[in-house]
Amino acid sequence: MLLVVLRQMWNTHPMRRSLPVSRTALFAAVSLVALVSCGGSGDADTNATVPTAEVESTIAASSETTSVETTALSAAESMRGKRYCEFLLLNPTANGIEATVYNSFPLGDCPDEQWSAIDPPAVAAAEGAVFALANGPRYWLMDSVGRDTSDVITKTLGGIAMNRYATVTITDPKSVGIPFTTQKVDRKSTFTFFAGSEVYLLVDPDGRRFVMQSWSQQRDPDLEEADLAGLASRLELPAGWSYVVEQLTEDLVVGADRAVAEVLQDNLQNSYSLIT
Image (tube, rainbow, N blue to C red):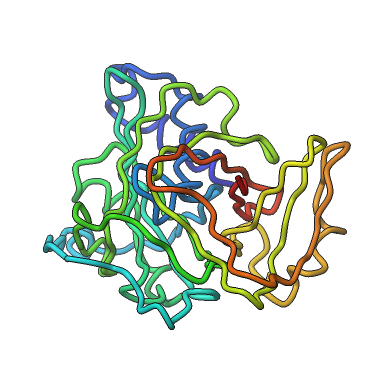
């Protein structure tokens, strides 16, 4: 669905012949950017649901920017199950494709009626981007995120308040977008899953374990958190891979302030991070 929409947008875009990157690279870049939500230099999800409703461009043009000091929750509060959506603003550069990631968490839960009424091309025009991709809805599975918030700003995109969490440059998108294929992301953040939480893991043939960080309703609008424990039967697992459900006996912390993360998605667009 997303690639079809992107091709249509590309074929009708007046700048397409002058852009210094290929269509294939631009389409594939979306998948990598979608794995970088709430990260430092990157973390999100793909096959974004692009709303088709027409909206007056004046809605998207109301883009107020303000500084914010932090988006952190209190230590006792969990973000697990919180709904969010994103906009990915894409522009070609001499070094590749630059994607700026705006995320609605924790400013709001991105209501369906408001989300489906947004016109992404109008958002792109208002923000001076070649493409604006609507990514969501999605739901967090970790309980907390730690990151430096000094560079976070808040902006209203299409009437929804969002935080800018990352700007990512994708220089080698050849393997992006293939389920169960890892990508390296310099996100400089930590995800914590509290003791007692149920977690959902992919295990590769080498025994490396990837924990699900967010689940998506983009491929299956009816997918709920309660369905995740039985998800194995719906996954198109490569040979040697397995899907495991575990109950944590202690906190699980994934990532580091200075480490490059490895991330991937399954065939339903749920996102996972490598446990190191």
